[in-house]
Image 1 (spheres, rainbow, N blue to C red):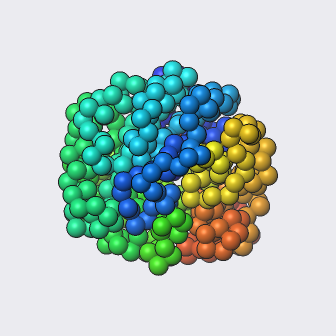
Image 2 (image 1 turned 60 degrees about the vertical axis):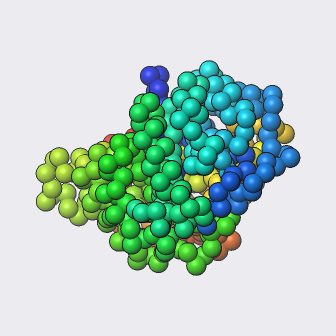
Length: 384
């Protein structure tokens, strides 16, 4: 669930010990408004802005509060479509001046022009992310709900690259495009991107349960992604599929003796097993100020500006229990990978109503009474 890598010249290495006092990443849904009608939209976006949207001087206070964490997070402006707000450049500038690393996930609509990209970079934007849900226009446009969206996305990606904005591609995997994982991986290898973030669908917002892939298909997808980490220049991570970390650790453990040092290193050059998860290094603020563990886990732990964002993240019972791997139930609670994986808490909540329940889409069965793989591992990577 991360846009990007370490944040600035003053980057302080983020470790698991920081989970309890500082989120690594904060998503701020600055508006619910968007002109697209995406089939799997988490926000159930609408054409018009909500009257209770956080506005004016309150935006400055929100940014100020984020700087009060012991470890300053990356702030991602999301939506809806952030470009539906006329003050979006001011928000980017405020965050940059406050010392936050600013990123954004705009919708690819006529609002996103080359001039807008230039203004965002001038305001201090450090990274931009675009959604690409297919290797061809037929697949992508059907998911996005707007003809021509695919072609416009490719054009704007090239424009962002031409002005030096680091680019992330977000792809949501569902039954509509599962068969295209390898095709998408190859297609985007020619787009000069920095990171491919592969989202695995959570039935929230407009996304339906029927669109989810089968549990066994996750393993097939993980294998494909793992193979691409060995050959692609861009980094690869998953969102709402923390069991990908378990998959990689298993592959590393099972194959370590048969791999060269270069091959072993390639497994973890993209992402190391820090264990970022919903509410665990991650915080989400809705357009109305609701404070959630993530955008996919809409459990309100507090509300800004009435509540302190720092206090809610550090002291809320919801956030605290999500950071405790021993609180997990079922096989997730018994699993030797629970500290680095922990399963998708959002998917558990969406499908069972209990955010501490077992990950519904993981086929792995824990080894009973086994010593934790990670406790005996030599891995020392720190980045999420």
